[in-house]
Image: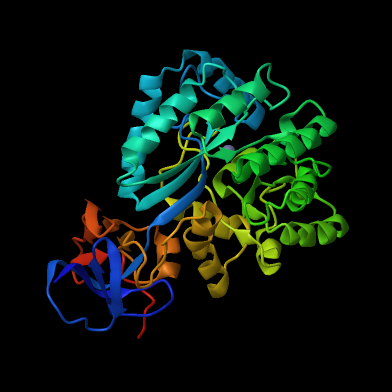
Length: 429
Ligand SMILES: [Zn+2]
């Protein structure tokens, strides 16, 4: 007796109409026409069933704070940081926990069950770290939450930056962050990268830095981060988030840089929604896009995974917890519109991000955790086009969210009565 069987599922790898059986929270079988009983059966009717979505870069201490204490009028990254600085002294643990839990509800409804969030350690009260540690524990049954100690105002630039970051790690925050391009000088930035990699090596922790989130082609902290990664033997455990300066760098320099990043096995985390919104703000025309070189980095074998970064906070007034919105934007900004390109983009929202986060037992094979999402779309290309309804979200074999399919009822003489948005209108097979 299985706990759950999903019948007639289409899978991200292109297999169609297969069954998925779940036992004890794990995938027990994936094949056509699985025989045997189950406590619960879901007929997927050839809809896409994927592993749950993964967001490797988020700010859960800032989410849903839009308008507090005021709006970002210029829309720039720097006003966002200043605005967050105004809000920070007013933050309470209770309000932080409440907003984060509300975001996690939204994430679950979108099939997003694994999130790495940066936690600002600039305020020595560390109310942010306290709150996010509590949230991590409370959402553990349904969301894997990783916490990065993030010195938003600069590791060296903030008065107590060095001490506060160490204290956050002592409290149980489990990844070392950084923001080298926001330190006072390039030299301070490079020194912060070295110091933070040393802390990670000493404590046996991964690293995930906001790195070169600027249009300045001379912001080259990713070079230092790659070199220090190799020096401290941290290969594969280091992520470079944003890397937007690579968009503006000289091509010859990039031809040296990318192999250096590959040697260090850097996990690359672009944030398409936020990059296209915040970068190029000082340009008139032509206006840069600002997102890092996704196609080139993927071609060089680097692990690229996309982050959502912000939802309704001082930096970004939009967002919905939907990783397909992130992928949709990535396709446009990276101009990766080919069929194989889009499949790679879907991987960057799922398996690549799971690798970045080091998630164990993530995947669509026997023995993996049954963390799944069924979408109102037939395949990954359609999922990226439609950002469709998440019909069912499954955590360890249990349905934890359901949404009714989106069906339009037409009132037109001689035309069909209904349109199912998830059925591909160009499907001629
Ligand atoms: Zn960020």
